[in-house]
Amino acid sequence: MKIIISTILSSLLLFGCAMSKKMAKNLDSWMGLSKHDLIQSWGPPNQTTSDGSDGEILIYAKRTYMNMPNGPIDYWEYTMMYADSKGILYHWFYKTDPNPPERIDIRLLK
Image 1 (cartoon, rainbow, N blue to C red):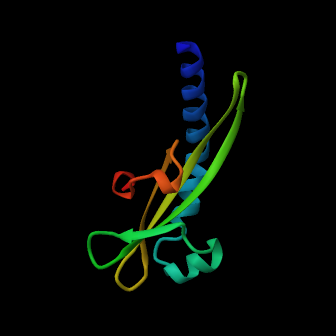
Image 2 (cartoon, rainbow, N blue to C red):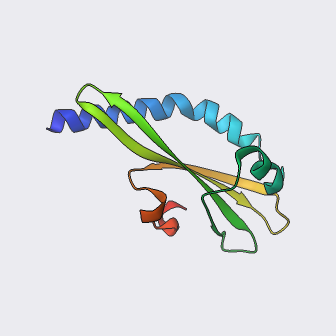
């Protein structure tokens, strides 16, 4: 059982590392643009919450499936885009989690 879990975690880490540079470059390209432009491109976020100041966090969630030798696994990819009080994107954060959006505590994702 430990080998199975280790294999799954290793695969997720390798997959995440391989995607991180491309993803970071894509997300970095949004910095300084407006949340309106983001919503026009990505669609409405799954959720929004305060950034703790006068801005907000737009939270996008995507369910991902991976076929593994011991069977499929699925998890959620969360991309949080931070917008200031003028609606300008200034920060992003990406995280994977096994829980769907309706079962996630947004405060723990930040």
